[in-house]
Image 1: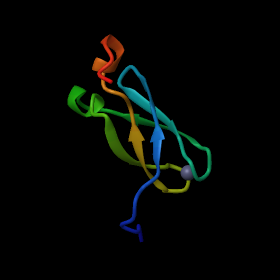
Image 2: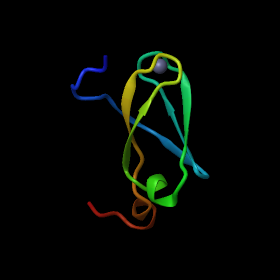
Image 3: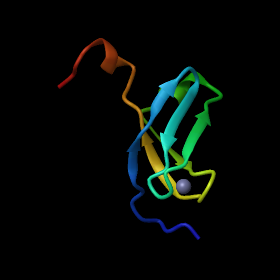
Length: 71
Ligand SMILES: [Zn+2]
């Protein structure tokens, strides 16, 4: 069973409508295909590794971050 603890947060890369990330547990390359732009442009999403099923929180910076810096 999946423990309800804090998931590892890892950086993902947007590529078209696909978000790629590397599993922190087994280093497998995974890809998430988004069905809607709303999902795609979320800054975080939970995903499970196809190889070892480890759940991670995939962080992708908002699109606004490319235009200006809010810090
Ligand atoms: Zn994995």
